[in-house]
Each structure stands twice: as structure tokens, then as C-alpha cells.
Amino acid sequence: MRKKIILACSQCNSRNYVTMKNVNRCQERFETSKFCKTCNMHTTHRETK
Image (cartoon, rainbow, N blue to C red; front, side, top):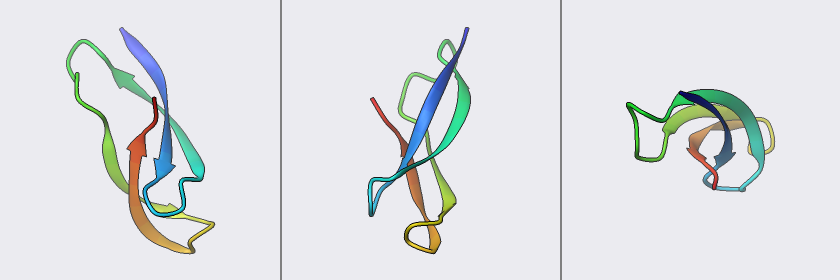
């Protein structure tokens, strides 16, 4: 089953991205490097609760 998740910037905590995640295969929190328009640079974005 796929679930919609929101990714938030680890530095400024702005919620910039929405993506899908397979909850059956991946139990831990999703984390990736994305561009944050508030910080104006690439930062780590993590899945919010």
C-alpha cells in the first residue's frame, strides 16, 4: 500500500515536497537531498509525522 508523505527541510522546517511511499516495504522515515527554495540551497528533507 502506498501512502502520501510530506517532506520538510531539516534546516528551516518548511514543507516543500509531497511524494508517495510504499509502507509495506519501507518502515523507517524517508530522507533525501532536495532543493529548498526558502534556504536557496540543497538540504536534507525528511518525512514529517
